[in-house]
Amino acid sequence: MTTVLVIGNGESRKDIDVAKYIRDYDTIGCNAIHRDAEVDNIVCCDRRMVEEAVNSENTKHSNIYVRPDWYNYFRKIRKDKRIQQVPDLPYTGTQRQDNPIHWGSGPYAVLLGAVMNYETVMLMGFDLYPKNDKVNNCYKGTENYAAADAKPVDHKYWQYQIKQVFLHYPQKEFIIWNNPDWKLPLDWRLNNVSFESFYQNAS
Image 1 (cartoon, helix red, strand yellow):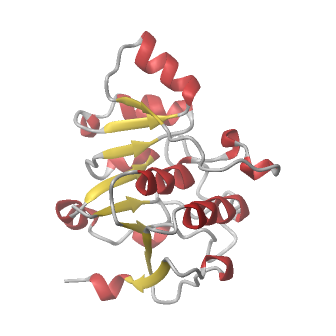
Image 2 (cartoon, helix red, strand yellow):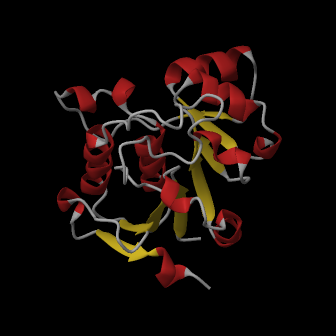
């Protein structure tokens, strides 16, 4: 395949039949995506999420990408062959958000899609910002996630970090799928980035 689908956990995908897309594309998911579907690759940065993914019935055939410290534990000590290490950042920077320790599962999942042998990387469920004053995540209020009424996480790091992926892989095409009223950030308006409504892809 020449296309990979990267699935974030923004609430825009709550009513989307993810399984339909998984049949059609190679896939990369984030954190608790395994609760809903079996994807080819999962990125987990928090140890609790790694533990949950490792123990899930839906990850028996998935690669689970983790930070170097969790890689050393799960792969070398627990001998779990599904465990892979997240890619190195394609650049170095001086800002706090340039430090790999401050990259989360979403940006790493987009980076993973970019470094793999695909021409096109499609993003689903990468909402960035909430529609209200509550956290925007499909799994809020469940185990290992923030409470449903928690304040939203500042999306600036995610926006900046994913933009770095776009900039450092200009030969790749990135397509963002979201609801029709979702706004593409101004600094994401690059030659290799485009936006499509979910409805354009419904069948």
